[in-house]
Structure formats: structure tokens, C-alpha cells
Length: 109
Image 1: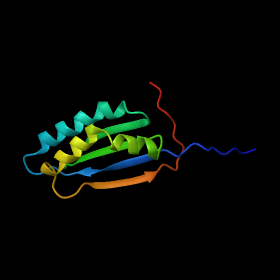
Image 2: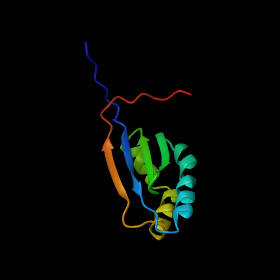
Image 3: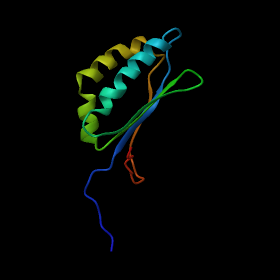
Image 4: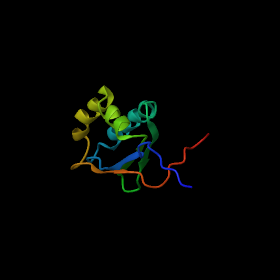
């Protein structure tokens, strides 16, 4: 017997940000200031910041649903970040978005 779930599939958002020359420290600070508050937003399943050897930053987020991600994106915290971001990055963010198709297994600490 198989069952189907009516729960929405988690969604992920991930991408790279390339700092302008001389702006890596400022960009790192801005991104780190997002981590803990974003992890506390309803529906946040994963929120991670990585720094690549080439100096780019990689942000990886998983949200319980599109509605949770939309709510997160509407926060004053994210609006302030997005307003300041162009000052510190080269070009546009390289961003990807999609519904998670593999089963999500919650991490229990």
C-alpha cells in the first residue's frame, strides 16, 4: 500500500555571490548577520553560508514551503540586506531555486 503526502515539498534556494575587490570582509559580515535570524524564521529547515577558496560566497537555504520562503523574503532584515548588497558584489548574484525532490530527512542534534 502506498500513501501520498499532501504536504508541500520543501524548496531550496542556493547560489554564489562574488565580492567586489576589497569588499570581502563587508560582504562576509552582511551574510553572517543573516544566518541566525534566518534560521529562526518559521519554516527554515537549513540555512548555511560557505566561503569558497576562490573568494566567492555560497549560500544554501531549505524552506518547508514556498510560503515560508516568501514570508522570509518579505522581512525587513532581507529588504535591508538586498538594499546594501549591490554595493559589495560584482555582477548579479548567481542564484538557483527549486522544489526538493529527494525526501527531506530532518537533522536531529
